[in-house]
Length: 439
Image 1 (tube, rainbow, N blue to C red):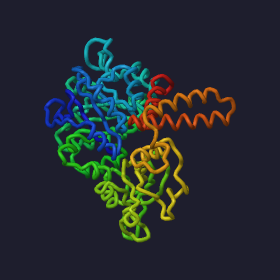
Image 2: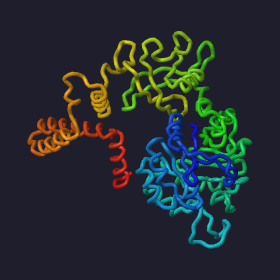
Image 3: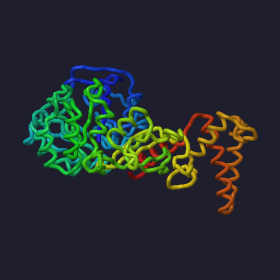
Image 4: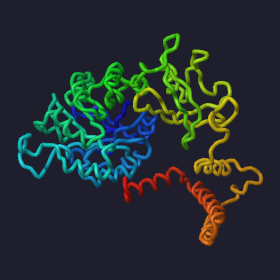
């Protein structure tokens, strides 16, 4: 997997050389989050919080719902980690707080303040679960460094990685001496780290070529891209393709490796399966619609090229072994060649999102006799209050179902009028569950 990084400092997206020299700056974090989400998780790093110079929290919060994010920078309490997860962060990246105990004086490994802070990591794991914890093991020439890479600790990278592994579902290793230089990752160090721990590893620092991404993926590690991505030295689409396990793909007579693709609608319905090749994936990213490799015709096949029932790509995800893909896509019409909505079911499943799409269509393109199109703001609010009373008055199961359906419909009409989506409401319920309930 390839993770694109959005580093934020003073409200701007930046790229720094060696953690200090400003190399690039731009002010489009939302657009970047939307684009990066097509390819995988996005790392959002609050550099100001990491360096104790402020916070970009309010800027970061909406990004967490736009993309599937791992968030880091200045996370020093279990409560902040839990808050980020409740807001939608898939994982949190713990840095200096995991490798320092401020209650201890002095420096150095022996009796000093730099050591694996087991109590702190245990508190994080208790709050959000080990699988959501990424511990950053940033190292310069094999020595862990903290505080924006300014403070040497005397801690050995490999020993420290083994010590934190019981509390981390993943490690983020940054090769600090190569960071921002695009001079190539220290592959020997990556291999040593891979041999020492069994948890997932993401590596960063100096990666500059697609071939390096292939080599890192072959070791079973993920790659986090920054400078090479922003300067255009590596294209994210190419990086995604290179990170996949094509060696496990199905070989054809022509030697073209193929990986299976499951196409899924935004509301979770499985639409179809097919196969892709490196060339087909490149075409998918280029056109923005799903392209497959036809096994019977042994050529590229753009879904909808004749029927116009295309599948507009929203995001692609590789499975844990990187040898199968899930494509979330918006269908322009029936997906199956038989004319059915899905190759697996005859009709589209009725979901909240589907209901809202019908309501939105009635407002945008009213048809004669449409009741929905007549519902102005005052009337729909009146109906919600009326239906809420009827739900409360319902006595038997069937009545509750009937009246609840009426209330649900009118509530969705009001949401649609106000520009509120079903996904936003579900996100808020998810936030409350994670904030107040058990993770």
